[in-house]
Image (cartoon, rainbow, N blue to C red; front, side, top):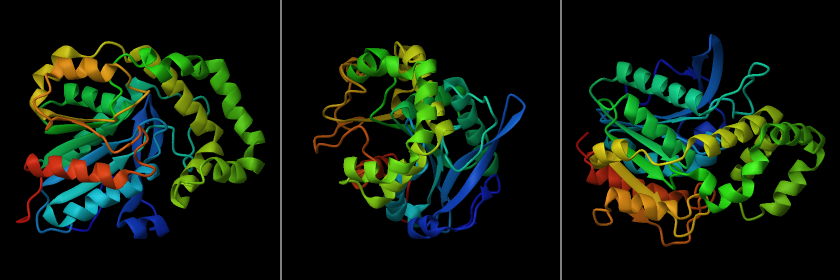
Length: 324
């Protein structure tokens, strides 16, 4: 039904953020190693007569979906009357307002399995719609693995500033890999407790150009030792696991791939050229190189530009229709 959230989401009360974005905030429950894990999700419903396409969005690391509210709300505003609904799903263990079991660790394998579960739920709920997966940064790698597992269900991948190959070799990977090692990650996450009294003024001082909404999301993350630890150990796993690009997977599903790169991105580095050569770059339709100074963390200040790009892809791929 138009305007309603899917039954597989446990909805929370509609807060100010939900009202301002036209979305429903909720929780998706996952069974991970026989333990139930609550994960933040947000749903933007379609308002047309017929649902044509569901976009499933997977964030980068840290995987807090509220960083992306302006981006997803703009995309939704443009196409909600044309058969489009959007589901954003956080990374396991990254949501500060949700408690996780002591000692729980969620690495790339668990993140991929969680998204596959969401895809299966969407497919069971609406088996006659198109499904587009959008991933940012490591979210792009996650959705490639979902495509591998569910090739007949996923219709397109939109990879935004994708980190899908040799992360440890990128400029940031070379500099920061040591920072993600487990003992250091544990120390840093515990230090966040001591630093809580100065979080607000520090965030305001260092990120004064950010919108207040984005600063609030960052403050909630910094105040959560569990979320910090989850993000850091996932980053360690990214350095170890994301190595050579999956040539056979990417070339087999070339028609489903759409990529957007920054002009300069130290989380991607020379891997952009490697993947461009690998995929053959059929004009600038499938691979877009942003030249507006959009950074890797596009969601902070440039969500509208990337929403426009994703909107162009949705239109070109026939995933939306004014007749819906």
